[in-house]
Amino acid sequence: MLAAGVAVAIAAIGTAGYFGYQSYSESNAPVSLPQPIPSVDSQLPEPTESVSAEPTPVTTNVLDSERTDPKKLTLKEAFAQQRVTVGRRAYTRTKVDITGQCDKVAVGTFASALKRQKCTRVLRATYVDNKRRYAVTTGIAVFPTKEAAVAADKRKNLAKTVWFRGLAGGAGTGADKADISGGYAAGLVWGRYIVFSFATYSDGHTPTSKEKDLGPVSGAFRDHTAKVIEKRVTD
Image 1: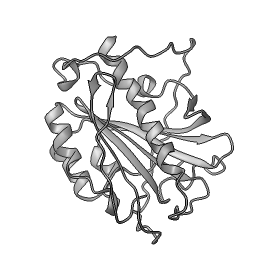
Image 2 (image 1 turned 60 degrees about the vertical axis):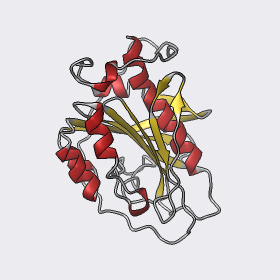
Image 3 (image 1 turned 180 degrees about the vertical axis):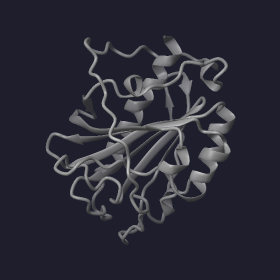
Image 4 (image 1 turned 90 degrees about the vertical axis):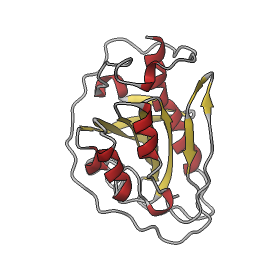
Protein backbone atom coordinates (compact mmCIF):
# COMPACT_ATOMS: atom_id res chain seq x y z
CA MET A 1 0.00 0.00 0.00
CA LEU A 2 1.31 3.40 -0.83
CA ALA A 3 1.89 4.56 2.72
CA ALA A 4 4.71 4.65 5.24
CA GLY A 5 6.94 1.60 5.40
CA VAL A 6 8.18 0.21 2.10
CA ALA A 7 10.02 -3.07 1.72
CA VAL A 8 12.16 -3.55 -1.38
CA ALA A 9 12.86 -6.94 -2.88
CA ILE A 10 15.08 -8.23 -5.66
CA ALA A 11 13.46 -10.75 -7.99
CA ALA A 12 14.34 -12.71 -11.12
CA ILE A 13 12.54 -14.66 -13.84
CA GLY A 14 14.43 -17.77 -14.87
CA THR A 15 17.92 -16.82 -16.07
CA ALA A 16 16.85 -13.41 -17.39
CA GLY A 17 17.44 -11.10 -14.45
CA TYR A 18 15.59 -7.95 -13.50
CA PHE A 19 15.33 -5.65 -10.53
CA GLY A 20 11.98 -6.04 -8.76
CA TYR A 21 10.25 -4.16 -6.01
CA GLN A 22 6.98 -4.24 -4.17
CA SER A 23 5.52 -1.91 -1.58
CA TYR A 24 3.94 -2.83 1.73
CA SER A 25 2.37 -0.75 4.48
CA GLU A 26 2.78 -0.96 8.20
CA SER A 27 0.12 1.68 8.78
CA ASN A 28 -3.59 1.85 8.12
CA ALA A 29 -3.57 5.64 7.88
CA PRO A 30 -5.41 7.18 4.91
CA VAL A 31 -3.31 7.50 1.78
CA SER A 32 -2.76 10.89 0.16
CA LEU A 33 -3.50 10.30 -3.51
CA PRO A 34 -2.73 12.44 -6.56
CA GLN A 35 -5.52 14.08 -8.49
CA PRO A 36 -6.79 11.96 -11.40
CA ILE A 37 -6.01 13.01 -14.95
CA PRO A 38 -8.03 12.38 -18.11
CA SER A 39 -6.94 9.55 -20.37
CA VAL A 40 -7.66 8.60 -23.96
CA ASP A 41 -9.80 5.52 -24.48
CA SER A 42 -7.87 3.54 -27.08
CA GLN A 43 -9.49 0.71 -29.00
CA LEU A 44 -7.60 -2.55 -29.41
CA PRO A 45 -8.38 -5.13 -32.10
CA GLU A 46 -8.60 -8.62 -30.68
CA PRO A 47 -6.14 -11.20 -32.05
CA THR A 48 -7.58 -13.90 -34.27
CA GLU A 49 -5.43 -16.63 -32.74
CA SER A 50 -4.82 -17.57 -29.14
CA VAL A 51 -1.49 -16.68 -27.60
CA SER A 52 0.90 -19.61 -27.35
CA ALA A 53 2.74 -20.59 -24.19
CA GLU A 54 5.57 -18.25 -23.26
CA PRO A 55 9.11 -19.50 -23.95
CA THR A 56 11.68 -19.91 -21.21
CA PRO A 57 13.73 -16.69 -20.92
CA VAL A 58 17.42 -16.68 -21.79
CA THR A 59 20.26 -14.49 -20.63
CA THR A 60 20.89 -11.68 -23.12
CA ASN A 61 21.66 -8.00 -23.32
CA VAL A 62 19.42 -7.41 -26.31
CA LEU A 63 16.88 -5.51 -24.20
CA ASP A 64 19.39 -3.02 -22.85
CA SER A 65 19.24 -0.54 -25.73
CA GLU A 66 16.91 0.56 -28.50
CA ARG A 67 19.84 -0.04 -30.85
CA THR A 68 19.67 -3.79 -30.19
CA ASP A 69 15.92 -3.79 -29.47
CA PRO A 70 14.57 -1.35 -32.09
CA LYS A 71 11.00 -2.64 -32.50
CA LYS A 72 8.49 -0.11 -31.18
CA LEU A 73 6.27 -1.48 -28.40
CA THR A 74 2.58 -1.23 -29.27
CA LEU A 75 -0.65 -1.58 -27.31
CA LYS A 76 -1.53 -4.68 -29.28
CA GLU A 77 1.77 -6.31 -28.34
CA ALA A 78 1.55 -5.31 -24.70
CA PHE A 79 -2.12 -6.05 -24.08
CA ALA A 80 -3.19 -8.47 -26.79
CA GLN A 81 -5.97 -10.21 -24.87
CA GLN A 82 -9.11 -8.58 -23.51
CA ARG A 83 -9.53 -11.46 -21.06
CA VAL A 84 -6.61 -12.84 -19.09
CA THR A 85 -6.07 -15.22 -16.20
CA VAL A 86 -3.60 -13.97 -13.60
CA GLY A 87 -2.98 -15.72 -10.30
CA ARG A 88 -5.76 -18.23 -11.06
CA ARG A 89 -8.28 -15.40 -11.34
CA ALA A 90 -10.02 -14.23 -14.54
CA TYR A 91 -9.87 -10.53 -15.47
CA THR A 92 -11.35 -8.40 -18.23
CA ARG A 93 -9.55 -5.42 -19.74
CA THR A 94 -11.63 -2.27 -19.27
CA LYS A 95 -9.27 0.47 -20.47
CA VAL A 96 -6.04 0.93 -22.43
CA ASP A 97 -3.91 4.01 -22.92
CA ILE A 98 -0.65 5.00 -24.59
CA THR A 99 1.19 8.30 -24.38
CA GLY A 100 4.52 9.78 -25.38
CA GLN A 101 4.22 12.29 -22.55
CA CYS A 102 5.44 9.92 -19.87
CA ASP A 103 5.54 12.54 -17.13
CA LYS A 104 1.80 13.14 -17.51
CA VAL A 105 0.96 9.64 -16.24
CA ALA A 106 3.26 9.74 -13.21
CA VAL A 107 3.69 11.83 -10.07
CA GLY A 108 6.27 14.24 -8.61
CA THR A 109 10.01 13.71 -8.93
CA PHE A 110 9.41 10.33 -10.57
CA ALA A 111 7.44 12.06 -13.35
CA SER A 112 10.30 14.54 -13.79
CA ALA A 113 12.79 11.66 -13.95
CA LEU A 114 10.80 9.95 -16.70
CA LYS A 115 11.09 13.10 -18.80
CA ARG A 116 14.74 13.73 -17.92
CA GLN A 117 15.71 10.15 -18.82
CA LYS A 118 13.92 10.50 -22.18
CA CYS A 119 11.12 7.98 -21.61
CA THR A 120 9.55 7.59 -25.04
CA ARG A 121 6.18 6.07 -24.15
CA VAL A 122 4.10 4.58 -21.38
CA LEU A 123 1.53 1.90 -22.17
CA ARG A 124 -1.13 1.13 -19.54
CA ALA A 125 -4.16 -1.12 -19.20
CA THR A 126 -6.63 -1.65 -16.39
CA TYR A 127 -8.22 -5.01 -15.67
CA VAL A 128 -11.12 -5.96 -13.40
CA ASP A 129 -11.76 -9.46 -12.08
CA ASN A 130 -15.04 -11.22 -12.80
CA LYS A 131 -16.35 -10.60 -9.28
CA ARG A 132 -15.42 -6.91 -9.54
CA ARG A 133 -13.40 -6.99 -6.37
CA TYR A 134 -10.11 -5.80 -7.85
CA ALA A 135 -9.13 -3.15 -10.39
CA VAL A 136 -5.49 -3.42 -11.48
CA THR A 137 -3.55 -0.97 -13.63
CA THR A 138 -0.49 -2.50 -15.25
CA GLY A 139 1.89 -1.17 -17.85
CA ILE A 140 5.32 -0.67 -19.38
CA ALA A 141 7.46 2.46 -19.64
CA VAL A 142 9.99 2.52 -22.50
CA PHE A 143 13.44 4.16 -22.40
CA PRO A 144 16.31 4.44 -24.87
CA THR A 145 18.70 2.48 -22.62
CA LYS A 146 18.79 0.30 -19.53
CA GLU A 147 20.83 2.97 -17.74
CA ALA A 148 18.06 5.50 -18.33
CA ALA A 149 15.39 3.12 -17.02
CA VAL A 150 17.41 2.38 -13.87
CA ALA A 151 18.09 6.08 -13.26
CA ALA A 152 14.40 6.96 -13.57
CA ASP A 153 13.37 4.05 -11.36
CA LYS A 154 15.59 5.32 -8.55
CA ARG A 155 13.40 8.42 -8.29
CA LYS A 156 10.26 6.52 -7.30
CA ASN A 157 8.91 6.78 -3.74
CA LEU A 158 6.11 4.31 -3.24
CA ALA A 159 5.50 5.45 0.33
CA LYS A 160 4.55 8.91 -0.94
CA THR A 161 2.74 7.78 -4.13
CA VAL A 162 5.58 9.09 -6.30
CA TRP A 163 4.80 6.53 -8.94
CA PHE A 164 2.69 5.84 -12.04
CA ARG A 165 -0.96 6.90 -11.91
CA GLY A 166 -3.78 4.39 -11.98
CA LEU A 167 -5.87 4.30 -15.16
CA ALA A 168 -9.60 4.61 -14.48
CA GLY A 169 -12.19 2.84 -16.58
CA GLY A 170 -15.64 4.13 -17.41
CA ALA A 171 -18.63 4.20 -15.09
CA GLY A 172 -19.97 0.73 -14.34
CA THR A 173 -16.76 -1.08 -15.33
CA GLY A 174 -15.56 -1.67 -11.79
CA ALA A 175 -12.46 0.42 -12.52
CA ASP A 176 -13.90 3.93 -12.31
CA LYS A 177 -11.98 4.63 -9.07
CA ALA A 178 -8.63 3.14 -10.13
CA ASP A 179 -7.01 6.57 -10.39
CA ILE A 180 -8.05 7.77 -6.93
CA SER A 181 -7.82 4.58 -4.85
CA GLY A 182 -5.11 3.47 -2.44
CA GLY A 183 -3.49 0.14 -3.23
CA TYR A 184 -0.34 -1.92 -3.65
CA ALA A 185 2.38 -1.24 -6.22
CA ALA A 186 4.83 -3.68 -7.76
CA GLY A 187 7.37 -3.27 -10.52
CA LEU A 188 10.64 -4.24 -12.11
CA VAL A 189 13.35 -2.87 -14.37
CA TRP A 190 14.21 -5.23 -17.21
CA GLY A 191 16.57 -3.90 -19.83
CA ARG A 192 15.30 -0.54 -21.08
CA TYR A 193 11.81 -1.10 -19.67
CA ILE A 194 10.05 -0.43 -16.38
CA VAL A 195 7.18 -2.90 -15.91
CA PHE A 196 4.67 -1.88 -13.27
CA SER A 197 1.35 -2.70 -11.64
CA PHE A 198 -0.96 -1.07 -9.10
CA ALA A 199 -3.73 -3.14 -7.53
CA THR A 200 -6.75 -1.50 -5.89
CA TYR A 201 -10.19 -2.48 -4.67
CA SER A 202 -12.96 -1.78 -7.15
CA ASP A 203 -15.04 0.08 -4.59
CA GLY A 204 -12.16 2.52 -4.05
CA HIS A 205 -11.56 1.94 -0.35
CA THR A 206 -8.02 2.18 1.00
CA PRO A 207 -6.66 -1.19 2.16
CA THR A 208 -6.35 -1.59 5.91
CA SER A 209 -3.46 -3.27 7.69
CA LYS A 210 -5.53 -6.47 7.89
CA GLU A 211 -6.19 -6.63 4.15
CA LYS A 212 -3.23 -8.47 2.64
CA ASP A 213 -4.65 -9.69 -0.66
CA LEU A 214 -3.71 -6.76 -2.91
CA GLY A 215 0.05 -7.36 -2.64
CA PRO A 216 -0.01 -10.78 -4.32
CA VAL A 217 -2.49 -9.51 -6.93
CA SER A 218 -0.18 -6.64 -7.87
CA GLY A 219 2.89 -8.87 -7.95
CA ALA A 220 1.14 -11.42 -10.15
CA PHE A 221 0.17 -8.74 -12.67
CA ARG A 222 3.72 -7.38 -12.70
CA ASP A 223 5.01 -10.84 -13.60
CA HIS A 224 2.25 -11.35 -16.16
CA THR A 225 3.06 -8.09 -17.95
CA ALA A 226 6.79 -8.85 -17.80
CA LYS A 227 6.14 -11.78 -20.14
CA VAL A 228 5.63 -9.19 -22.90
CA ILE A 229 9.27 -8.16 -22.45
CA GLU A 230 10.42 -11.74 -21.96
CA LYS A 231 8.93 -12.66 -25.35
CA ARG A 232 11.04 -10.01 -27.05
CA VAL A 233 14.15 -11.88 -26.01
CA THR A 234 13.29 -15.01 -27.99
CA ASP A 235 11.24 -13.64 -30.90
